[in-house]
Image (cartoon, rainbow over all chains, first blue to last red; front, side, top):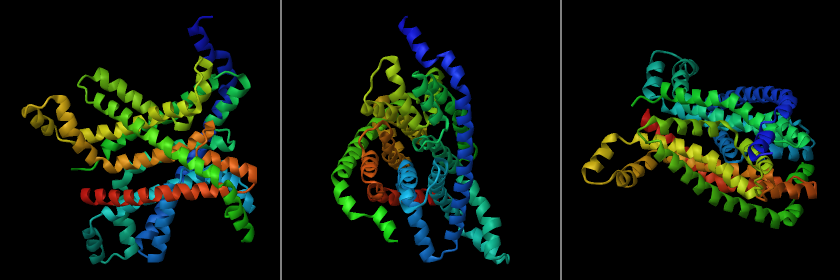
Length: 226
Length: 224
């Protein structure tokens, strides 16, 4: 067998690919589900924290800032491992899926809070003053005047960060979640052939390449006007 | 509460696990000291090439960057570590990590530096050229310093992410901080070593997070 045949036989083996494609596809759905849950929970929690921070209650703000710093400084895999292998010692058992969801949601919460907050503070104070002098109460001003401008401003960094953290779903394979990577690794050890990994990589490209390219577009579409 | 302290902040266990944890921390620092410059070098090459005028260089480059930004780093690492041996290349965990990080973080650094170079007005290069500097000199002495300054927060932020990312090397059994903590945990049946690793990461990286937070806010305030 020539080297080229050996190479295609290992990495692009049709028989192995056919056998493991359904498993990878299951993994793909699981990855999408996990990513969706993380995006919803993380961004919502981040937005809520940013809104609370805008109310300016000192001790609460210190707590928020500390929490945000904590989850920005810790590697996501460390948080996942801590939740999955550590919490059972405190009597709390979670499935790998829930552990990965919780960990990555906390990370996304921290980053999106920081981004939303930066957007809120970047809205010129004149907007506040104008709205309040028109007789609108604090909350109405905040929700209808400040937040829409802030959110629009922060869309590019928020999209980029969300993509980056969503790619972290691959880390769930470490705590035995059969996501794309988990299914691919299982496939390799059963078939002793790396084709499932090729399929897995292709699945990730299928999933994230359009998002990354869309991210480029968002960056120009919502770019800062200079 | 006592059970909790027993399980997560057990000083007896910590004293026992201390030597391996310290060893892991050292490995994490060494690994970071290797992969950060490697990634910056890769990114610089990509960014400089992307200033090429012909699209036959720029487009493949963009595809390269987008592919490696789309693949989760862990997937890349596992592919290199578990896949390459089938192609006849035996790679050590360390080599696999170095290659994976070079490809992944290089793409990110490359994007950042390209944005930096594009943020410097074209007149800067023209002025440099008309003063008699070569294109290379103009790039090195005039454009790049301004480019780096413009994207400094992004560069620092990416470096923070890279240092955090070194924890995935644990998956290929490279004995860095997280791996050592897991080892210690599975021997002692106690979560204290993982907690200690988390605290170590936090102490190491918190100052960087604070600095970034300040830089980002200032940048946004200037733009608004």
